[in-house]
Length: 220
Image 1 (tube, rainbow, N blue to C red):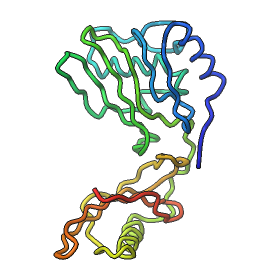
Image 2: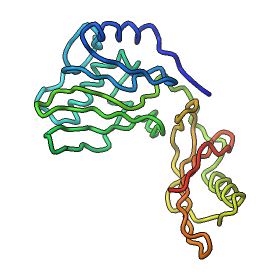
Image 3: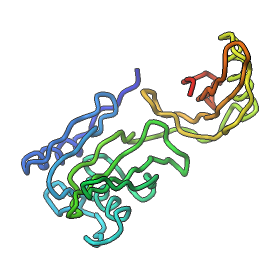
Image 4: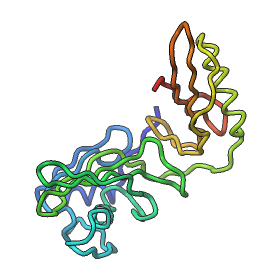
């Protein structure tokens, strides 16, 4: 199984952060934090990214979320948060807290396996970031398998399991597949069917755009 080890720059930043009461939990395989928790994660500190951009404390939560990731860039080994992450949505809970959900992108393609949530308390202070961030992605972006071939391979795989071939009702979309796997270009698609004997099916597929291997499938 593919894994990455945190580098010395990350470890030094985490050591400084932990000395100030920041709690960091590591992802076992990604070599990046699964959770960072502490007071005012957007404050200037010894562990901060020295080239971070200042963000207005009363600005939009989405802008402040990017400011938090900018500040934590050394810990995540993140080069440019505004190019590597994009906002999916902001959620408000009954306590007045805000939670900005973000998805990772690489060269404009969504990274399947890379998502972070930045949490703000009712005073607007960032107190936690959690999720998965895939650092140091290096993969080619020229597909060797076409979208049509990916669909055919997925349908063939479905039929081999005794299911109908189904029809495409989502995708194919080029993504970077990085869920418990070395990042690589893949096709994401969904096949659906309505069968009188076995009932309905909504199968999501990730097919390698390099080899045609089925990287992941599940019935949605």
